[in-house]
Image 1 (spheres, one colour):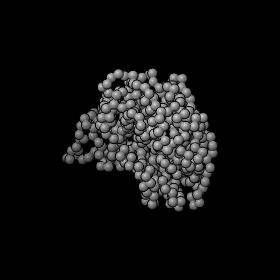
Image 2 (image 1 turned 60 degrees about the vertical axis):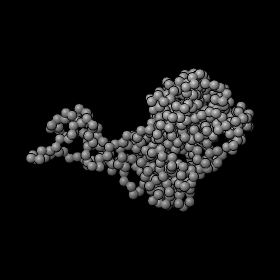
Image 3 (image 1 turned 135 degrees about the horizontal axis):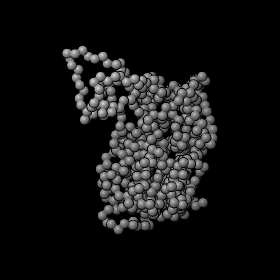
Image 4 (image 1 turned 180 degrees about the horizontal axis):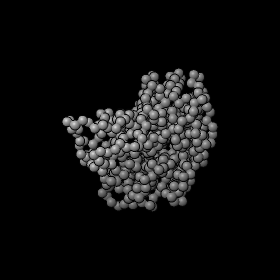
Length: 500
């Protein structure tokens, strides 16, 4: 095994940049991936989280750009030669920072493209011309639609966190991107987890790829101590706050299943003396960036997040990761706990498990091929008679961060005033004749308790019968019968329409 970056064939400028960052010996994935990328062929690479996969593709790409010239001879604009696609805005910013750090002694230029921020600075950078674009798919397609980016000369395509980029949530956008770039390209797929289905799909994108697996498939880092706390569903938040304050823990990354759950847990922890903030897809990009920076700098004790923080984020010396809710997808567990125990450091991953979570835990243990030790905390012993209830997967849950297109997500219109919203082309509501007694209306639920808005057909809004009979269909259950649980004592059920 090569024991230095020079032996891997990297230039003096790249080796100097890596050395200045404090790295002298390449990791296992870097030793295998860098020569494979330099050879010019396609690559499917898997390695544990926190083992330097980003450098495994950025360094050889920078080497290639420094030794070859673009195929285009046009001088009007420097062509985009490398496209790196990632699933989240935070990861896009982190990869772009790595490109700048590793390439600070080279001439390669880079631009990061993601939503939630103004598109104008990105347009200006693209017009000046860049070699490397790091992007989320949604905002990238926005630029394609505005003709501010040309992908016809891309030489290298990288899918970081490739298993997420090729799942059903991203796949429609990815197919559009694939159609815009040359077929004669080098394609590199990197991730910590690859299911058999994703590997089969990846085979259709790659041509005679090299296969690199620096650790057993879907395995977790040995330096991360994993444990399960058994607890009743309604006492999860109470147990977590108790353990944080009792053990004086600081810097915890806590994962919840839904955005609403992240907000509720963050509020609960703050009321119990733990400084916490939530980040998820409904937060503005500025709020997400500020919360993440405060957490990294140590100003914030706990960061409560959905799975947007599970992929690729590198937080130095993060001691604790907590799964307040287990993920629906077992591979997401590997990525979540991979935020700790990185780069040779130790870490602790704790999962709060109630009776409802047992099937999810079984799937996770099957994936990682090991049993996770369980503990029961004194004073929080689970009730053995508590029966499992189904975990309802809310609409939009588990889907990619499509807020990257820079447009606000749709949400249900509020019904606080009790009035139905009018469409722009609809007729105004007919006023009751004050001389005639009001016609008896069928009993209705109060608008404030509706769990979701009822759609109205356009034809009905314009040509509704004058004496329409009330519908015989039963009304949907109100929020106080919702099966979506927050596990937080003292809080009511969510009143929002969807938990995206």
